[in-house]
Image (cartoon, rainbow, N blue to C red; front, top):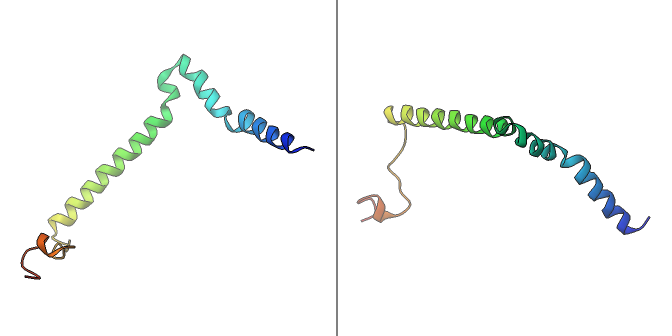
Length: 83
């Protein structure tokens, strides 16, 4: 078996097996755009829910004054602590 045959086997596996779902999505897009992009819509929905949850948590901690805002990385940003 030559080294070339190994690379052709990898190519056949990648094109025939690994890229098959992408080929199916490409064919589906010609028929129905929304169905082909349902996974993208699902991920955008997850991101939107996570963003809203994160903002609500930040608001909750901000309202309870639980965040320590006294320390800064440079003295010129935080007032008279080092002056």
